[in-house]
Length: 305
Image (cartoon, rainbow, N blue to C red; front, side):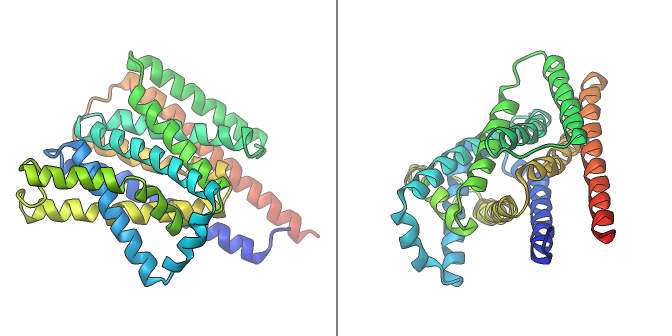
Protein backbone atom coordinates (compact mmCIF):
# COMPACT_ATOMS: atom_id res chain seq x y z
CA UNK A 1 0.00 0.00 0.00
CA UNK A 2 1.33 3.43 -0.94
CA UNK A 3 2.03 5.71 2.03
CA UNK A 4 1.05 9.38 2.17
CA UNK A 5 4.74 10.38 2.10
CA UNK A 6 5.29 8.33 -1.06
CA UNK A 7 2.28 9.98 -2.69
CA UNK A 8 3.52 13.48 -1.82
CA UNK A 9 7.01 12.63 -3.07
CA UNK A 10 5.58 11.25 -6.30
CA UNK A 11 3.44 14.37 -6.79
CA UNK A 12 6.42 16.64 -6.26
CA UNK A 13 8.44 14.46 -8.61
CA UNK A 14 5.85 14.88 -11.36
CA UNK A 15 5.81 18.66 -10.84
CA UNK A 16 9.62 18.75 -10.93
CA UNK A 17 9.70 16.72 -14.13
CA UNK A 18 7.05 18.99 -15.71
CA UNK A 19 9.02 22.10 -14.73
CA UNK A 20 12.26 20.80 -16.19
CA UNK A 21 10.63 19.76 -19.46
CA UNK A 22 8.81 23.09 -19.76
CA UNK A 23 12.10 24.99 -19.47
CA UNK A 24 13.82 22.68 -21.94
CA UNK A 25 10.86 23.05 -24.27
CA UNK A 26 11.34 26.81 -24.68
CA UNK A 27 15.17 26.76 -24.73
CA UNK A 28 15.37 27.05 -28.56
CA UNK A 29 14.22 30.66 -28.21
CA UNK A 30 17.09 31.32 -25.82
CA UNK A 31 19.73 29.68 -28.03
CA UNK A 32 18.46 31.56 -31.07
CA UNK A 33 19.38 34.79 -29.28
CA UNK A 34 22.96 33.53 -29.45
CA UNK A 35 22.86 32.13 -32.99
CA UNK A 36 25.75 34.37 -34.08
CA UNK A 37 28.03 32.78 -31.48
CA UNK A 38 29.93 29.54 -32.16
CA UNK A 39 28.18 26.53 -30.60
CA UNK A 40 31.36 25.22 -28.95
CA UNK A 41 31.98 28.64 -27.39
CA UNK A 42 28.40 28.68 -26.04
CA UNK A 43 28.91 25.18 -24.62
CA UNK A 44 32.11 26.26 -22.87
CA UNK A 45 30.32 29.21 -21.25
CA UNK A 46 27.40 26.96 -20.32
CA UNK A 47 29.72 24.55 -18.51
CA UNK A 48 31.70 27.34 -16.83
CA UNK A 49 28.70 29.30 -15.53
CA UNK A 50 26.78 26.16 -14.55
CA UNK A 51 29.67 25.10 -12.34
CA UNK A 52 29.79 28.55 -10.76
CA UNK A 53 26.05 28.52 -10.02
CA UNK A 54 26.31 25.01 -8.58
CA UNK A 55 29.20 26.00 -6.29
CA UNK A 56 27.26 29.05 -5.06
CA UNK A 57 24.23 26.88 -4.27
CA UNK A 58 26.39 24.36 -2.42
CA UNK A 59 27.92 27.21 -0.43
CA UNK A 60 24.56 28.78 0.42
CA UNK A 61 23.10 25.44 1.48
CA UNK A 62 26.18 24.51 3.50
CA UNK A 63 26.86 21.36 1.49
CA UNK A 64 30.45 21.98 0.40
CA UNK A 65 31.80 19.89 3.26
CA UNK A 66 29.84 16.88 2.05
CA UNK A 67 31.79 16.79 -1.21
CA UNK A 68 34.74 15.13 0.54
CA UNK A 69 32.71 11.97 1.15
CA UNK A 70 31.41 12.04 -2.40
CA UNK A 71 34.90 12.17 -3.93
CA UNK A 72 35.98 9.34 -1.64
CA UNK A 73 33.60 7.01 -3.50
CA UNK A 74 35.35 6.18 -6.78
CA UNK A 75 32.28 4.47 -8.20
CA UNK A 76 30.16 7.58 -7.67
CA UNK A 77 32.83 9.84 -9.16
CA UNK A 78 33.20 7.56 -12.19
CA UNK A 79 29.43 7.47 -12.76
CA UNK A 80 29.07 11.25 -12.42
CA UNK A 81 32.04 11.79 -14.74
CA UNK A 82 30.49 9.58 -17.40
CA UNK A 83 27.09 11.28 -17.05
CA UNK A 84 28.86 14.64 -17.36
CA UNK A 85 30.42 13.54 -20.64
CA UNK A 86 27.03 12.43 -21.93
CA UNK A 87 25.62 15.80 -20.91
CA UNK A 88 28.38 17.65 -22.76
CA UNK A 89 27.73 15.76 -26.00
CA UNK A 90 23.98 16.27 -25.66
CA UNK A 91 24.30 20.02 -25.00
CA UNK A 92 26.66 20.62 -27.92
CA UNK A 93 24.56 18.71 -30.46
CA UNK A 94 21.38 20.44 -29.28
CA UNK A 95 22.80 23.98 -29.37
CA UNK A 96 24.32 23.34 -32.81
CA UNK A 97 21.06 21.83 -34.13
CA UNK A 98 18.92 24.75 -32.93
CA UNK A 99 21.23 27.43 -34.36
CA UNK A 100 21.65 25.50 -37.62
CA UNK A 101 17.93 25.35 -38.36
CA UNK A 102 17.26 21.79 -37.16
CA UNK A 103 14.85 22.44 -34.27
CA UNK A 104 12.25 20.02 -35.72
CA UNK A 105 14.79 17.19 -35.97
CA UNK A 106 15.99 17.97 -32.45
CA UNK A 107 12.39 17.65 -31.28
CA UNK A 108 12.27 14.23 -32.99
CA UNK A 109 15.25 13.24 -30.87
CA UNK A 110 13.38 14.08 -27.71
CA UNK A 111 10.33 12.19 -28.95
CA UNK A 112 12.54 9.13 -29.43
CA UNK A 113 14.24 9.68 -26.07
CA UNK A 114 11.29 8.64 -23.86
CA UNK A 115 10.99 5.41 -25.86
CA UNK A 116 14.63 4.63 -25.17
CA UNK A 117 14.07 5.58 -21.51
CA UNK A 118 11.12 3.23 -21.15
CA UNK A 119 13.05 0.39 -22.83
CA UNK A 120 15.96 0.97 -20.42
CA UNK A 121 13.51 0.94 -17.50
CA UNK A 122 12.26 -2.48 -18.56
CA UNK A 123 15.61 -4.02 -19.51
CA UNK A 124 17.83 -2.60 -16.76
CA UNK A 125 15.51 -1.77 -13.84
CA UNK A 126 13.03 -4.58 -14.55
CA UNK A 127 10.05 -2.22 -14.39
CA UNK A 128 6.85 -3.84 -15.65
CA UNK A 129 4.53 -2.25 -18.18
CA UNK A 130 0.80 -2.83 -18.20
CA UNK A 131 -0.97 -3.88 -21.41
CA UNK A 132 -2.18 -0.36 -22.18
CA UNK A 133 1.32 1.02 -21.68
CA UNK A 134 2.75 -1.59 -24.04
CA UNK A 135 0.16 -0.59 -26.66
CA UNK A 136 1.07 3.09 -26.25
CA UNK A 137 4.76 2.29 -26.59
CA UNK A 138 4.14 0.22 -29.74
CA UNK A 139 2.19 3.09 -31.34
CA UNK A 140 4.96 5.54 -30.47
CA UNK A 141 7.58 3.22 -31.96
CA UNK A 142 5.57 3.04 -35.18
CA UNK A 143 5.41 6.83 -35.28
CA UNK A 144 9.15 7.20 -34.77
CA UNK A 145 9.96 4.57 -37.42
CA UNK A 146 7.62 6.32 -39.84
CA UNK A 147 9.25 9.68 -39.15
CA UNK A 148 12.70 8.21 -39.68
CA UNK A 149 11.67 6.84 -43.10
CA UNK A 150 9.93 10.07 -44.13
CA UNK A 151 12.99 12.13 -43.21
CA UNK A 152 14.80 10.44 -46.10
CA UNK A 153 18.17 10.37 -44.32
CA UNK A 154 19.71 8.92 -41.21
CA UNK A 155 18.50 11.20 -38.37
CA UNK A 156 21.83 11.26 -36.52
CA UNK A 157 20.97 14.46 -34.63
CA UNK A 158 17.76 12.97 -33.25
CA UNK A 159 19.29 9.60 -32.36
CA UNK A 160 22.34 11.12 -30.67
CA UNK A 161 20.17 13.39 -28.53
CA UNK A 162 17.83 10.50 -27.67
CA UNK A 163 20.52 8.02 -26.64
CA UNK A 164 22.73 10.40 -24.64
CA UNK A 165 19.92 11.79 -22.52
CA UNK A 166 18.19 8.45 -21.99
CA UNK A 167 21.39 6.94 -20.59
CA UNK A 168 21.93 10.12 -18.54
CA UNK A 169 18.48 9.66 -16.96
CA UNK A 170 19.23 6.00 -16.21
CA UNK A 171 22.49 6.93 -14.48
CA UNK A 172 20.64 9.40 -12.26
CA UNK A 173 18.08 6.74 -11.42
CA UNK A 174 20.64 4.10 -10.47
CA UNK A 175 23.29 6.32 -8.82
CA UNK A 176 22.17 7.59 -5.43
CA UNK A 177 23.89 10.96 -5.55
CA UNK A 178 22.14 14.12 -4.38
CA UNK A 179 21.12 16.22 -7.43
CA UNK A 180 23.21 19.29 -6.60
CA UNK A 181 26.35 17.36 -5.69
CA UNK A 182 25.98 15.21 -8.80
CA UNK A 183 25.65 18.25 -11.05
CA UNK A 184 28.76 19.73 -9.43
CA UNK A 185 30.83 16.70 -10.46
CA UNK A 186 29.27 16.63 -13.94
CA UNK A 187 30.14 20.25 -14.67
CA UNK A 188 33.53 19.97 -12.94
CA UNK A 189 34.54 17.43 -15.60
CA UNK A 190 34.63 20.23 -18.18
CA UNK A 191 36.11 22.98 -16.00
CA UNK A 192 39.59 22.91 -17.53
CA UNK A 193 38.63 22.55 -21.23
CA UNK A 194 35.76 25.04 -20.89
CA UNK A 195 37.89 27.55 -19.02
CA UNK A 196 40.77 27.24 -21.48
CA UNK A 197 38.47 27.71 -24.47
CA UNK A 198 36.71 30.75 -22.98
CA UNK A 199 39.88 32.54 -21.90
CA UNK A 200 41.76 31.66 -25.09
CA UNK A 201 38.97 33.13 -27.22
CA UNK A 202 38.85 36.28 -25.15
CA UNK A 203 42.62 36.78 -25.13
CA UNK A 204 42.90 36.11 -28.87
CA UNK A 205 40.11 38.56 -29.68
CA UNK A 206 37.70 35.97 -31.08
CA UNK A 207 35.52 35.82 -27.97
CA UNK A 208 32.33 37.85 -27.61
CA UNK A 209 31.84 37.97 -23.84
CA UNK A 210 33.68 41.27 -23.37
CA UNK A 211 33.43 42.62 -26.91
CA UNK A 212 29.91 41.58 -27.92
CA UNK A 213 27.95 43.99 -25.74
CA UNK A 214 26.44 43.62 -22.28
CA UNK A 215 23.29 41.89 -23.61
CA UNK A 216 25.27 39.03 -25.14
CA UNK A 217 27.49 38.79 -22.05
CA UNK A 218 24.39 38.59 -19.85
CA UNK A 219 22.91 35.85 -22.03
CA UNK A 220 26.10 33.80 -21.85
CA UNK A 221 26.38 34.24 -18.07
CA UNK A 222 22.71 33.33 -17.58
CA UNK A 223 23.31 29.95 -19.25
CA UNK A 224 24.41 28.81 -15.80
CA UNK A 225 20.96 29.46 -14.35
CA UNK A 226 18.89 28.18 -17.28
CA UNK A 227 21.03 25.03 -17.23
CA UNK A 228 21.20 24.34 -13.50
CA UNK A 229 17.54 24.82 -12.59
CA UNK A 230 15.98 22.27 -15.00
CA UNK A 231 18.76 19.75 -14.38
CA UNK A 232 18.18 19.88 -10.62
CA UNK A 233 14.44 19.50 -11.17
CA UNK A 234 15.08 16.55 -13.49
CA UNK A 235 17.48 14.89 -11.04
CA UNK A 236 14.93 15.25 -8.22
CA UNK A 237 12.21 13.79 -10.43
CA UNK A 238 14.43 10.87 -11.46
CA UNK A 239 14.76 9.88 -7.80
CA UNK A 240 11.06 10.41 -6.99
CA UNK A 241 9.06 8.74 -9.77
CA UNK A 242 9.28 5.64 -11.92
CA UNK A 243 11.70 5.91 -14.85
CA UNK A 244 8.98 4.82 -17.29
CA UNK A 245 6.71 7.68 -16.12
CA UNK A 246 9.64 10.11 -16.30
CA UNK A 247 10.20 9.08 -19.90
CA UNK A 248 6.59 9.57 -20.97
CA UNK A 249 6.31 13.01 -19.32
CA UNK A 250 9.31 14.06 -21.37
CA UNK A 251 7.08 14.45 -24.46
CA UNK A 252 6.25 17.94 -23.20
CA UNK A 253 9.69 19.32 -24.16
CA UNK A 254 9.84 18.12 -27.80
CA UNK A 255 6.26 19.22 -28.39
CA UNK A 256 7.17 22.76 -27.39
CA UNK A 257 10.37 22.50 -29.47
CA UNK A 258 8.33 21.44 -32.48
CA UNK A 259 5.80 24.24 -32.14
CA UNK A 260 8.57 26.81 -31.77
CA UNK A 261 10.48 25.45 -34.76
CA UNK A 262 7.45 25.40 -37.05
CA UNK A 263 5.45 28.46 -36.00
CA UNK A 264 8.16 30.85 -34.79
CA UNK A 265 11.17 29.95 -36.93
CA UNK A 266 9.22 28.66 -39.96
CA UNK A 267 11.06 25.33 -40.31
CA UNK A 268 9.75 22.87 -42.90
CA UNK A 269 7.01 20.56 -41.56
CA UNK A 270 5.03 18.87 -44.38
CA UNK A 271 1.92 16.79 -43.78
CA UNK A 272 3.84 13.58 -44.51
CA UNK A 273 5.96 14.31 -41.45
CA UNK A 274 2.99 15.50 -39.38
CA UNK A 275 1.39 12.03 -39.66
CA UNK A 276 4.27 10.51 -37.71
CA UNK A 277 4.04 13.17 -35.02
CA UNK A 278 0.28 12.54 -34.70
CA UNK A 279 1.05 8.86 -34.08
CA UNK A 280 3.48 9.78 -31.30
CA UNK A 281 0.99 12.22 -29.76
CA UNK A 282 -1.69 9.53 -29.91
CA UNK A 283 0.64 7.18 -28.03
CA UNK A 284 1.10 9.79 -25.33
CA UNK A 285 -2.66 10.23 -24.94
CA UNK A 286 -3.13 6.46 -24.69
CA UNK A 287 -0.41 6.19 -22.03
CA UNK A 288 -1.77 9.07 -19.96
CA UNK A 289 -5.35 7.82 -20.29
CA UNK A 290 -4.36 4.33 -19.21
CA UNK A 291 -2.40 5.70 -16.25
CA UNK A 292 -5.40 7.79 -15.14
CA UNK A 293 -7.76 4.81 -15.38
CA UNK A 294 -5.31 2.66 -13.41
CA UNK A 295 -5.18 5.27 -10.63
CA UNK A 296 -8.97 5.35 -10.47
CA UNK A 297 -9.09 1.55 -10.24
CA UNK A 298 -6.49 1.50 -7.45
CA UNK A 299 -8.35 4.21 -5.54
CA UNK A 300 -11.63 2.30 -5.78
CA UNK A 301 -9.87 -0.88 -4.65
CA UNK A 302 -8.51 0.90 -1.55
CA UNK A 303 -11.91 2.37 -0.67
CA UNK A 304 -13.61 -1.01 -1.00
CA UNK A 305 -11.32 -2.63 1.58
